[in-house]
Image 1 (cartoon, rainbow, N blue to C red):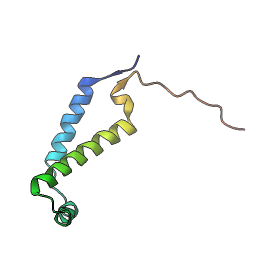
Image 2: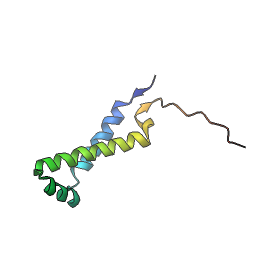
Image 3: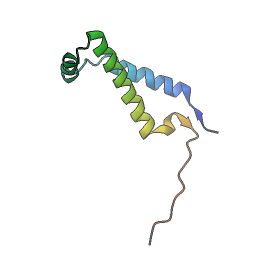
Image 4: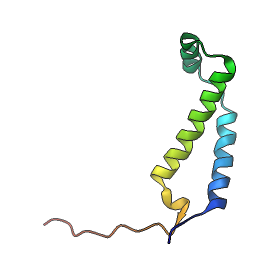
Amino acid sequence: MPTIQRDALHAFIDRQLFKVESTPVPPELAAIADVERLQADEVQALWLGAGIASQIGMALALEPGRFVEPWPQAEETPEAA
């Protein structure tokens, strides 16, 4: 039965959180915030949420076997002749 490798996942999330938290809000997001009348803390929260969601989502989509073991292997299909 597949299980989540929590230590690996937690370590990955900690590394990604550090990267996201240390990256300033891009000017494009700040400009949108002005139009939407968002407060500075709302913009920062949006940036952090979007950043961590995209970092984790991409890792899980591209390399799910890093965090779920054993990851089922796809059966090889014979190539069409």
